[in-house]
Image (cartoon, rainbow, N blue to C red; front, side, top):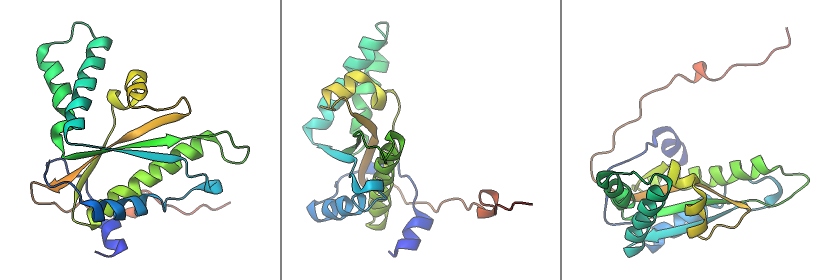
Length: 187
């Protein structure tokens, strides 16, 4: 798939199954992520690949944190948290790793990590893989960040759930660029 086709047709795919990306595919995804726009060439990102039994452990962590935050949580809600990471055969946790820099503000470093995440998603689509970027409470909770080993200068940008699409990939709905782009004039 050429680059413009991947950019024009990429969609999030929620129904994922095995196999997860193989080593060669992962290498391609990682290379794409590292080509993100990066003011100051700081490389303000890192990634954690989570698969196999570690997905079960992540679900247990989600449930533990959810119960810590809401002691009256129901058993059904706890089971939902446990099962969240099992929706894909692999998760890549995308992390912004920021540093003080007089020329590159904190927000630009977070955005760069987001751009790296988007590159990873687009590369996955181009390779015929399915992927979806997920966030929510389990991406922003301090306990989760601590358990995943994030440093104080790091933020979890989100989780990329990735695998093989288990349903046919649909075409994205068309959007009119003119609704979002205009030309500035000083009249």
